[in-house]
Image (cartoon, rainbow, N blue to C red):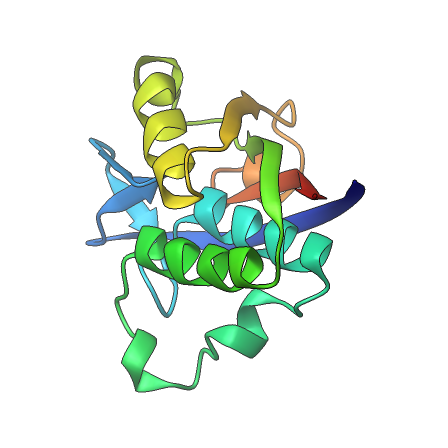
Length: 157
C-alpha cells in the first residue's frame, strides 16, 4: 500500500448580502464569503488537500477563478469533481481533518452536518471538522474574513 498526505489552505473576505456556506451548510449569519464560487473555505481547503496528496495540482488549476463556468458554483460539486479525479488516479481518502479559522460564527451546532456533507462529497471517507479563533488577531480575528486549513491522508492499494 502507498500513502500520501496533502495540505490545503483557503481564505475569503466576509461581505454583506452573500449567504454564508461552510462545509456545504448554509449558516444564518449577517455576512457571507466573497469568492468566484460560493466561497466555502472548508470545501476549498479540502479540495487542495486531496489534490495535493494525489499530486494533481490545486483548486486554481482545476477550477480557474477567471472561468465563468465556476461563477457561483456549489463548492461541494467542485469537491466531488476533484475527488473523482483523485479516485480515477487510484487513490482513496483514509481521513481528512479540516479547521475553520475565525472568531465567528460558531459552528458547533452545524459540525455534524458539515462532516456528513463533506464526507459524502469525497466518497464516504472520514472527514473531521473543527474550528479555532485567533484571539482577535489578524483578518480572521477582526471578523474581516474566514480561513480554513485541511490535511488529507490518501491510500492506494
